[in-house]
Image 1 (cartoon, rainbow, N blue to C red):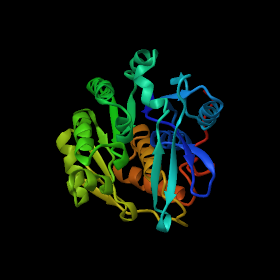
Image 2: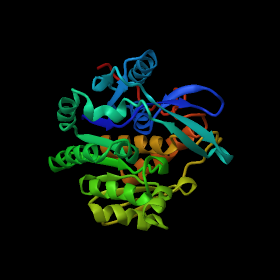
Image 3: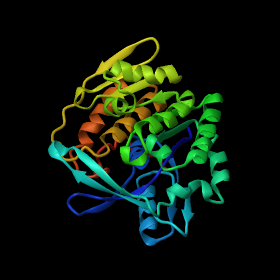
Image 4: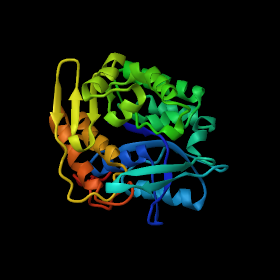
Amino acid sequence: MRLVVFGEGMVEERGDGAVAWGGDVVNTAVYLARQGARPELMTAMGVDAESASIVAAWEAEGVGVGHVLRDAARTAGRYRIVPGADGQRGFAYDRSRSAARGFFDHSEATRTLAWAARADILYLTGITLSIFGRDGRERIGALARGLRMRGGQVVFDPNYRQAGWPSAEAAWGAMAALGPAISLAMPSLEDQAALTGAATAEAAAEAWLALGADEVVVKLGAEGACVASRDAAVRVPAAAAARIVDTTAAGDAFDAAYIAARLLEGASARAAAERGAELAAEVVGWPGAIAPTPVGLRHARSEA
């Protein structure tokens, strides 16, 4: 199956001064690869040495980079993890030279979108939407609608970051416009509360079911997750974490394990959510977005 993830790869500056890399869709792509999938990353990066080393690291993780466009005038965006209590975190961003933001200006963008339109699964997030203007979001919407109309799966995590939007209302407006193309929505209750005021998992799920999603996974942090469809809902408890160092990418890792189990392997919603919870509990035990191997390494990858 062709599994395309679309978004932004970034340089990660950690609270302890270490420099690594991450970005929400990149995190999910890496953990998908460690779960045995073969995700293809669609984005743009620079041609500088730092960008080249990051792209090489993605490839070494098993993420396809054949459709990572290269922009000689730009480089990778950056984010800094601002640590808080109990492993919670905030982020500060610098996207002034982000190549990903210029994706739709690239001469190869149209060809790359045509390639992505043949995907079986497309994964993107609210951060993906936030780095583009209206024209870019309309092109994303056209891609997602076409893919779903021909039977593909469009998976969306709202991943709301206030700094990326003029207001919560603007963010929800952009997400709701994409909503009818989304088959699987994966919000956190925290994000949905900020976007629409949803106070419960059921209210969060209903917002996406009303837009046309077939299935909604509401991530509840320490309370686990709730998976809802029009016919049923199931609650799954969180997995116990041996330690909590940094919650960065916990939701991204949950998404990866859920997608691998549910969409690629045909697992039940409960089993997929349990696997997502298990991986998230592992990831929070390490600093930064990408935990060291073998965290999340479920299946040995076969040779291409």
